[in-house]
Length: 240
Image (cartoon, rainbow, N blue to C red; front, side, top):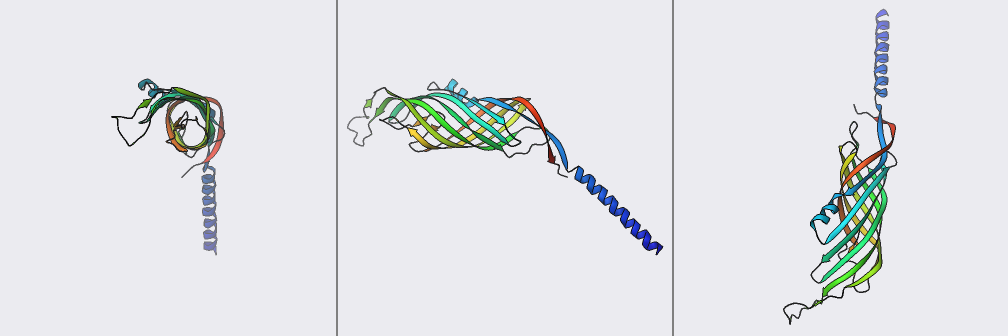
């Protein structure tokens, strides 16, 4: 009987010890982490580089995002482009501005105090621009002359516009305090496109080349700066 009591109390002690350890593990299973909330503004380095090395292109784009929650960001871009495109049969110049607005969702979980993000998002884009038909050739299979004759009307059509939706996949990595380098890839779908009477919009500012259809693609390289506004602590699970 005494031996049975000893075993019973020993099992109770072991059970209490296990319970205490489990309770301590439960306390340690979450830990506070501080997240910074603020406005991040930047510029597209690719468009600046294109403007410096390509005499037929001048453009600039400013980017921005504002953190709403731990994972959601309001995001957008605004820019201006002036480009002259020279295809086989047509030479034209497009000038205009554009605005994109939407959101990004960050699905990357950082270690410690890192603030890198990998996002997927959506944008609504709108552009207002003009098209100038510099010159064109008439396509023919009957080459009586050495080459097709070139016509140079120099006609300009103002007041053109386009609207589209844009799926965005991107990332931003902190390089030094508050400074981030980023990259994004975009797939676009036109749903509104006002064209000149004499030819299609082959290039739309902010949308890029249309290739005679309603789908397009683009990308940017950005350098941005975070303006911190406030901090917020949240409890996060701690992996054993």
